[in-house]
Length: 105
Image (cartoon, rainbow, N blue to C red; front, side):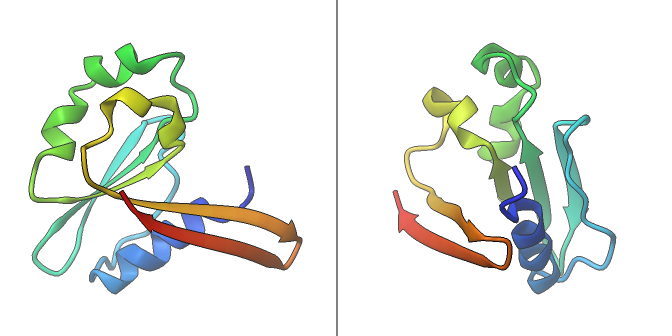
């Protein structure tokens, strides 16, 4: 919490051409944005009790579309992640410093 996940996703969405406000979908679970010719889905799975809730919301329709999918708290759905994705981990070092690790899976 408070590491900067939503801030990072907001910046990525802006780079992809989104002009609308990007906010955390904590309660809605998923927000949809329109970029420059592409859809962007922003998920926050923090509130999920188990993977079944992601199945019930039809996560597959989002993940396997041609849209960008940015996921906060992917550890809540480990068995549902696509075979290939980019994992970004943000570690808080102090109030003003983060360590970011990017790994292609």
